[in-house]
Length: 324
Length: 256
Ligand SMILES: Nc1ncnc2c1ncn2[C@@H]1O[C@H](COP(=O)(O)OP(=O)(O)OP(=O)(O)O)[C@@H](O)[C@H]1O
Ligand SMILES: [Mg+2]
Image 1 (cartoon, each protein chain N blue to C red):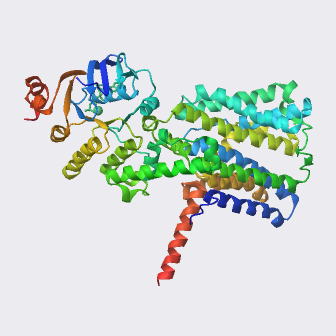
Image 2: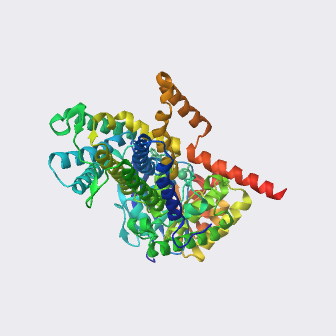
Image 3: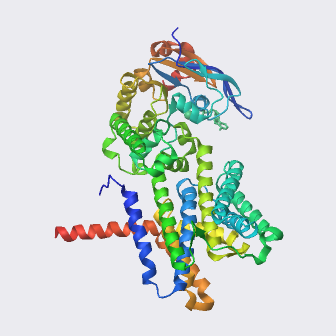
């Protein structure tokens, strides 16, 4: 089906937003809403990371650092220096962006395992700073007293209002990512993923494109970071460490490489899973691991790949049904 | 002598102790098919790599339309009009056939990132043009009916054609083909010969042809340069080359 006026991406995004906005009315209590907010935050980061990893083929094992930089920067700017929240948020996103821009040049010259190691090292260094710069960050025990998000005089005081905000933010991130990947930039990124030589031979500036997508994905992580800080009003280094960087990678891989919708699914699924496994108590981590392994085994191209295969099969069945 | 489109002057490339190219001169005149032949390891691919900026010159210069492009990175040389295909296929296997060729138009499809995020009318116009130009190139090489197939599913010979369509989409002044007939059967090779002539005659693109298939080389080329141990042994028309005793001794003779 062709939708020339608003475009297919916009139509999908609009539908997605409606769906998201309906979710709170199906939930039994407020607690689930907070899980959904965290899921949406993670989805913003995972979509950004997939632009880098799934489309452009550049691994990052340090993306939690950009999430943390955004969170700490706005926390310190607003709670300590009393800056207005929008200013703090702008500073948070900018810091993640600038740091990514500086780190990108030396790091993205590396490939494969070396790139993974370099981003891993970067993430660890930032994590050490969060832990050790006690005067600034509050150290391991964390940073308290971050103001709840308020914009243009409206305070997102209830979880429901915060959730609605996140639904809008996530929808925009998804829509803009879909649009970007369906342009010359998206083609160039997918091209250099397969062959840097061939992409360069056709006029693609490899270094500039890698840097662009790295910075973009860091900025999205930073955006999630500021929204996280002003949601929880408390942050601690443990949320931005190596473990979370790995979880983000798992969200992308499980959701499906080079699929924006896949990353949304992967992030929501992995955020909800530990909650769903609560009743297994002591063995929940085992069940969690088993589910991951089974998913990857049976859905090698992720949730997105599995869903598209399922829909193809259903369509074929329907066609057969029509024929007979 | 008419001004050369491409002028490689005294190009030397060393990899550690290996002298891949030694003071190699190579010119391509506008509107011609110019072949570069020589035994395995003679330095033909290295010369293409040096022309397109993929290996650095130890010394020497590459001139395009009289302008020195030796210090430009590969993507700038592509923008300047030198585009190539690869001896070992470098098709974007994760993309469709059409997307491959649209990626080839990267440098000619101009709009800002903001325009692509907002899908402005200018963006949509440029994308439509990109798509039509890409389809035209696919039509030209005879792959139009496979536009929506995954590029990785194409058989070998068709992937070679796809690389040519992708390169043509960049609207080059000079198209460098690295062993386009490798792996093709005789029927496909004959069609390739027609295609190379059509690239020269109908598209007005000069062609640099690296090839081992001598029947193809001698039938489509206007000029031939023979490379031997990284150094040009002879240059001339196909007739002159086939009659050249040095070339026969060093290279052509070995087939007989
Ligand atoms: N990147 C590299 N590093 C080291 N040596 C190289 C490199 N590229 C080429 N060589 C060497 O340079 C010489 C010329 O190689 P080149 O690939 O240019 O030959 P060719 O004429 O294209 O041969 P063929 O017909 O087999 O493709 C060979 O000895 C090769 O081993
Ligand atoms: Mg070669």
